[in-house]
Image (cartoon, rainbow, N blue to C red):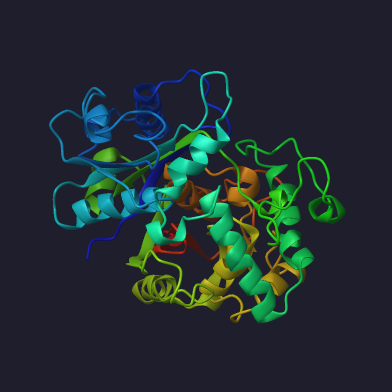
Length: 401
């Protein structure tokens, strides 16, 4: 197996891309990553691009063809991938696989989502309908906003099964909003909330589904944004003229998919998620205790807790406690979602998995913003999911030596 490195990372601010078109988004993502290390797109051998609502919201397919329009990329092996909210992570794996089979030495993974119009406004019902397509048909009936409803059910199950309080999960949102205040790329960087605000039902904070515990502040954001990673082998780094010391190695990676239907399986302990995370650890030759920084897919606060358990940082049912005890803080045992997570950094669906790796790379290189940089990080891990804890992409990163 060839060693794979992150040679460059680039992202937009998360929130609103306004009048930026899809072709412009893709071109900016590619050129932005290339600019980080002073190379032209022609230096890239392969590529992959992930997005989720590109057809339903943007009326645009064949994104690989748009990437091939960037000067220097025409005629190269590029593909579009879709794995719901794990599309970004899947794009990274797609590039890695191309490099491993010898299709090139340098590749780029791009992810984006454009969920708002040119004025920055969103159509909540349309977005809810579009996202609902990524659930099982049998589990859509009677649900207005399908994914919040599904995760409200998961949240209720988690609270009852593990005797956890709503405020314990709300602590996750409060911590992430606090982190986002120091992240200049975060959508909610100008917002601060207290636990009382996260719990009090007033103003924008309401129960999303009557009779279920999920509240507005438990939810991730509707977000525009893009992110891109340039990946390279040892030979690729030499071609790029990038020093290995300036890179981060993707030392472990794995993907697994659980059944799409939530009913009939243990969604509080998703088998595929645990399998992918453990395979990534095994490939990297590390254990959960070695990880000092991580980004997990907190599309809702309950996933911040479950994600912490998938990482192996907390026993099943103890993920929320890990946050409440401060262990997930910047100075904690393992700094989780120092970016602000999906809840406060934002969730541009196709870009999310890529942004997780990029942020961890910044952490390992000591490039995270002031107030968020972890001291002497050793190993980083990411956990990106798609659907109702269905598709899981997990990675392990470490500094180069």
